[in-house]
Figure (tube, rainbow, N blue to C red):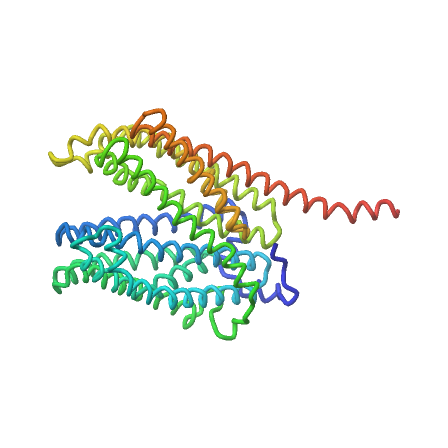
Length: 481
């Protein structure tokens, strides 16, 4: 638990309070709504950019597309690390803002930035040197050279990938998701503009796609740095004067960051496991359906991810302020809103599964996959309604600094429930690819229910402990009277 620091000056806190901080300190329902909207828009734009990027690279040829594909699993290390550091920064900065400890929030933000620089310095040389042999190990074969050409350029920008995500996280922690949206949108648009110019116009090929990615994230990093350091319109201050070395602050960030990063990699691992089972029971066509269809699933849950990201900030601020009833209200409201969105998504997916399928089966070569795609999409209708319970429980635990609890829930959901159900239904029962899809649904339902029950118990205990601590002095006073 992060108590208010003895040196915290609540009057200076209120004077420097921005609109976003005021939002975090106010009604949790309003905070969830207003913080989630910009995040959802930004994430949708990022999803569109990822699709556009793949389309531009595909135009160069199959080898270039394959080369990027072999770099992607390695790049996931950076994505997982950046998301993890971001979660740790959001959690601790939001908790200290909730505790009205601005110096502590500033110091936490500076620690997160320095951790990002440290990790970038450690992994950049390793990734740039090792990418070609790693690509060969992953089966790149004759495209290993192209993969290395792309990877060395992308990994040279590791420091920008880490720092910009940490800065986004700090903005989210102070309730400023609008500027986060602007920055993420600008990065996506700039990348989409640079891709064709560098890939085709400058004749750089796959290297042009890598350069476009690095330039776009570096440019936006400078914009975000301008907001924090030059314009100084943020609540949190990034400066040398704000930094005071503190091992506990660093470990508090890492206590959320490392488990959150592992959660991200765990999700990638379960996809690899499912691919292996699908190849064994149904062949490569089933893998094509699952991996392509899963892109649609990830796109469909973007609104839920936006709510989950905002819930980390709101939960952290409520926990830091010891306003546990607000924490309960925020989680309950997020569950209701998320479940409503998920039910609408399920209905739309069921009704329009044939139309969605057309996007993947419009050629004579892929037409035979249509029935399999429809089966996948309609089975996933049972998946969406239970996503909020698992996802939002993790957000609460991350926001309150319980990163390991969030990781345990993710381990239970992915490795124990989903992996076991997939194996039993697909292999033991013999349901083949349909068993894989049902196993994902069944494991997600059970994992979501466990996460939901766990977070409810956790919040109720916080409220009970606070009530007991408040009531005890009154009881003693009554006896003395």
